[in-house]
Structure formats: C-alpha cells, structure tokens
Image (cartoon, rainbow, N blue to C red; front, top):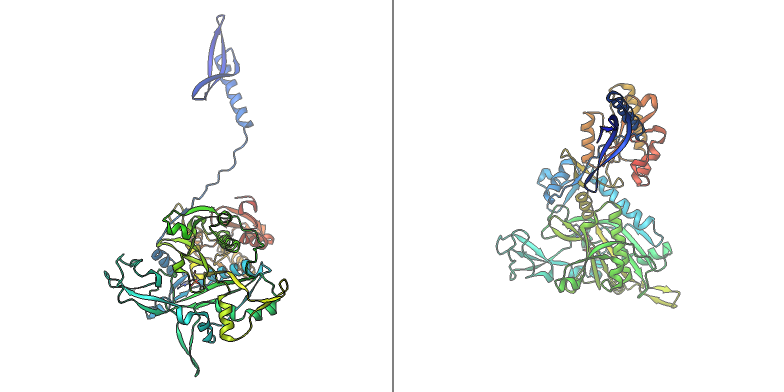
Length: 551
Ligand code: GAP
C-alpha cells in the first residue's frame, strides 16, 4: 500500500511517498520518492509516479478460464444405462426381451470396439517384427477341442445359493470358499454339478462340433504353417483377434461376463529357457503374488522390473509381457491407479498353465480379471502332435536338433472388458454436471464434429465441403442443429475430442476454429492446415496448446 507522508524538518514541510509491505509477517515501511513541499504538488507527483509504474508493469496474459473435469465413479448398471442411451451397447434383440449374455453394439460402440482392436493390432502386430497375425475360423474340427483338453476339462460348477436360491457358478477349486454375489449366502455343496462351458452345435450331416471357447487353439493348429509362410524365427508370436463363445452359467455385470465375446490373443513361442532380449518397460503397478495371497499380505506397489529382480515374477518374459500389456492400456488413457497384477494360486491354474499372472482392474464390483497372461509351456503343441499325429517341431539351428517350442506367455484379453475399462476411466463430469467422455482420441468413436454456425447456404456449403474432406479419413459428423453450446455438450458426452466451427469470419479468412473437448479451449487455423493438424492431434503427436494461438 502506498501513501503520502508529511515531515517537518527545521520548521519546513516536506512530502514523501511511502509504501507499507509485509515482510516475514511484519509490516515494513519504505520511502519510495520525494514529492515536494506542497500538498497539491505532492498529490500530482504521486499520481504521475503511480501511472508510470502501471505502464511499466508487464501486461497480464489474458486469463483463460480452466474447465475442471472431475472423474465420476459410476456403477456397472449406470454404465450400462449410459451405453444404451447413447448408442454404445444394448441387449441383443431387445424387442424380443434380449438374450442373457449377448449384446449388440450400436453406432458408437461398434466404432469404439473397432478402434480398440485396431490399436491393439497396430501395437502388437504391425509395430513389431516378431509377431504376425492370423484369422482362424470360429468352428473347426472338433478333435481340436479334444486335444486341447476343453472337452474334458472346460467346465464350471453349477451351484444354488442356500439363502436366496439363485443359481450361480463357481470354479471347481472355489466350492465352499466363495459366497453368493447376489446376497452373500453360502452355496449348497451337495447339489453342485459340473457344467460344460463349450456350446455344442451340429455341422451338416457329420454331427457334433463346438463354437470355439478361445481363439488360441487356431494359432496352435496353424503354428507350423504360419512359421513357414512368414519365415519366423524363435522367439516369435502369433496374434489373433476374434469371437469366442462360452455357455456361462451366470452371465453378469453387463459386458464383463458374456456368452459371446471377442478375444485379442498372442501365443508367444520360445525355446525352453530362452532369455528375453527385450527391455522390461518401466511400469509401476500394485503386485499381488501367490505369496501375498497365501500369507494374507497387502499387495505392494513396485516396478515390474524390480518384481522380477526380487524373484516375485519368476520369468523375464512374464515381467516383459505384463509391463508391455500395462503400457498398452496406459498409453491409451487408462488410469494406472485402477490396475494391479495378480498371480494365480496353484489350485486355480488352468489345466494347461505352469504359471499365470492376470492384469486386474478395480471394477465397481471389485478387483477382477481383465487379461490373463499364462505360461502354457509346450502343452498345446504336444497335445496337437499327439492327437493329429503330425510333427509340429522346428529345427533349431543352434542345437542342430528338432524342438517343440514353448508358449512362455499367452497375453489374452477380452475386447469387451477392455472397452469397459476405457469407458469407466474416461467418465468425467464438468462444472455444469454434464458428462464429458475423456477417451483418448485414438479410441473416440467420432474424431471430429463439424458445425456451421451461420444459417446461410454459402456457409453450409463451405462446412459440408470440409466435412466431406475429413470423412475421407475419419469417422466425423456434421451437426447443424441446436445452439452451439448444445452441440458441444452432445459431442463431449460421447467423447468427440475436436469440434470444428465455421463462423462468420471463416469464408473470408479461409479458416475455422477447433475446440478441444478436455479444456474447451479454441484455436483458429487455416483450412489448408486442418487435416494435417487434426491427424497429429488424434495421433497425440502434438499438444492442442501448441497448435496455435488460443482464442
Ligand atoms: N486363451 C486363454 C483364455 O481364453 P481366459 O482367462 O479364459 O484365457 C482370456 O480368457 C480373457 O478373455 C479374459 O481375461 C477376459 O478378458 C476374456 N473373457 C473370458 N471370458 C469372458 C466372458 N465370459 N465374457 C467376456 N470376456 C471374457
């Protein structure tokens, strides 16, 4: 604070400009200037000084209002209702009452699902030299499922709750250990009966076959063919995305447990004891090993690399694939705080597995399996050798011997579970309580919305031309109705990252404005640059704030 003081020296009056400042909690006074001998002169001089000071101060940057988004935790039922309302997913053939465990994907859900698969394929197949992809058939020779062990072992126990009488399912090793998810009651053990999970079907005249319960087996049956065609050398992987079917006793929790779903799987083949040549990605995660579970210890946050070095994760390959899979999720915007890795206890291992670690996600109904990463050894290839009587071994140049490769890791992920994770983590609300779906632009069903805001034919024609051009490359929409605020809100809710507005200046200046969903900030850019900039924004190669001057 500044003020004038009058001092009397040798009977004469002098005026000074003083300032009070708080320093270390105490008010200190400092004289800034001498203002002369008269009151009027002093007041004028002070005014001049203060105005001069103001001018010399740097002009403040235009304040940009930050729109705070708040992540909202919702239940699985709320998510299901949102997905239906907006056109992501709904019960299959709902006009007939639906079909339990079967879901149809709408105009947004099918795009989101495709984007998840496309990004998975790019990361795991296209961008790697050691993995190639295939697309096997859904129905195959039934012998495949005898060899794989599914005909004999792929079943759950059908149980009924003693308290609420609802039917449920438990894994064979869980009887007597788990409670009814509906009411917390105990399951009747005496009446528990084995329930086969493969759907049986009839094929032509020849008889019984099955809908595949996993995509993996088609990789094993085609293993030699693919290796020869693609001239793959160990270590290498074969990937596949496709439908799988399981006659789940109790499909539940929306898309979490369905009877028809899609898997994205890799069988990664190595020689026995072959070292992993790849660096383990630097990822921190909650680790919940078999020992943690058996000794009732808390899970621990650590680097996956350290978990391997401490012997918690036994194989370098397992550590590498766990970290790589987490990296895929985190790169696409999933929240790392909602993830943990959990080792299967001996009793819960599948019939083919030596060791399995799951990526688990904190769903609203608890920590649940998102992705399984099993060490399948050479169980499957040796079973198929036995049943088909074909030699599936490869010649190893190093040892000059024929060897049957081992699947050291099988990263196996359900597309629907990945979709749930991305939706849960993207679900935000803004200051007005409106939903903003903060999906990574690579996953967003609609990449951009084009809005003409002047209702005149020449502006609409101009906007249509931009829309037609963008449509060549991306799924974009043209939205010409409603207030601009309403149009933004509609698109925020379904995760459209960029809204392009053609305003009254656009025709003259040959430019548009782009608004970014997560900050609501806008920039003006030339139409000639629009496609390149949009491409870089969607791919995450540039930050919105660095594209141009914010308006
Ligand atoms: N080939 C190995 C295999 O199929 P799994 O643990 O039975 O292993 C792998 O399944 C992944 O498939 C699971 O982690 C999950 O993401 C997905 N999945 C399995 N059953 C599912 C179901 N009924 N509904 C939706 N996704 C399912």
